[in-house]
Image 1 (tube, rainbow, N blue to C red):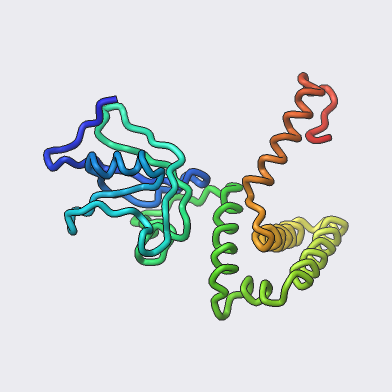
Image 2: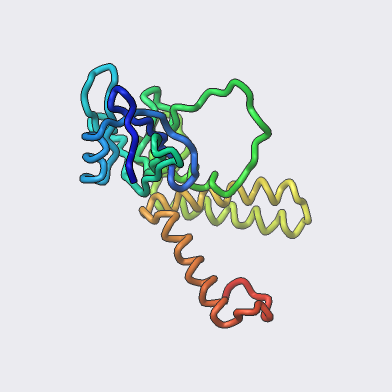
Length: 217
């Protein structure tokens, strides 16, 4: 690796959420900021306006923990995947790229669970007025348990009634309240994914050719 810094001693850095792959921001590093990032495990940038190194989130608490650092084929740009704490943008938006000139058709995927979990975590932490999540958390464990029970029954009824639209809507409600319960108990989604992965591997070991037709034990 022989990184190429420009005539000002800088290299552009694209910062990306390691889970959702959402691009969070574009900034610059000089050699000292790059070395500081490697040394600490947290992203440091070079401020072109202040002419100084700054650690992302040092004052706001919105730190960026380094997961991986990649460089492009010309060795003159970096892609850093991070675990983002809080938001990346000074406007309060999660990503600096929150506005669109043209918007392609939305491709929905399970990454919405990670995004929603982060929002719920922030609601639990800040307890903002007018937030349903905050009001539910303030009521305590019993309220959260009760809502999971209610939404589970609604899913069962929708399933029994063969109503696809209701099943989708009630499943979304159940998933949301389950995420609230997990965040309330500080159970990370990664821990749930890890458990599912362990079960999948155990199934593959028992049935490597897939003859049993079972996804889990």
